[in-house]
Amino acid sequence: MPRISAAQRRSDFIKAAVEVIATYGIEGATTRRIAEQAQANLAMLHYCYDSKEDLFADVYEFVAGRYRDALEGDDSPGDVRETARRLLRGVMECYLESASFTAATVELISWARRQHGDRGIAVYDKALETVRAALRDAEPDHPIEPEVIDEIAFVLAALADGFAANWLTYGDRAAALGQMEIATSVLDSWLAARLGSTPVGR
Image 1 (cartoon, one colour):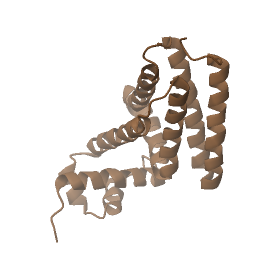
Image 2 (spheres, one colour; image 1 turned 120 degrees about the vertical axis):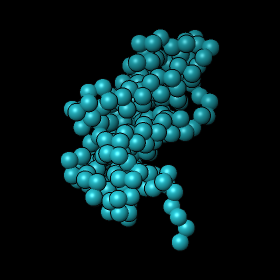
Image 3 (cartoon, helix red, strand yellow; image 1 turned 135 degrees about the horizontal axis):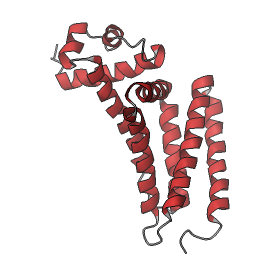
Image 4 (cartoon, one colour; image 1 turned 30 degrees about the horizontal axis):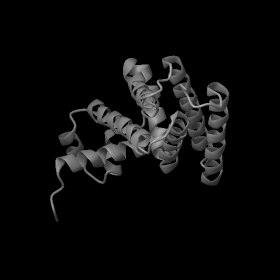
């Protein structure tokens, strides 16, 4: 049987932690449960991680990376409206891909906000800054005012977070697919009202 590297084991433990946090919450995410979910022994988990805090730090990085991948996954050119639609759909599709990821993300951010203050805000801040950067880059020849960028980022976050809450509550994939279309149409309507019918910055 081939030996599993420490790096692969850490990846297994991170993914297992996401599943355990989604099922049992932060308080119920014991190292024993995480090791069992990863199909590894507890000693191996402690060999890879000095503490549960260290493991959770890597889980935070995993969550931030998934957001980044969802937000940067499609670099097709487009104006600010098309970019905003792509960003919203990317995050909703990321949530729809894994209810466990969605649940664990909500748990981690809420818990870290209570326990560590700024650490809980960091994942959210990173995601919002990625959104702002993509919107700023959408029409480099016609810059959009920073306050408008902030407004669009807020609307995207509100729609994506509302979608996530509904998806977690009901777990109905067919309904969630329809709600993705509704959320996108709400964004389109708001953008039309906020930006007008003429190209932004022209």
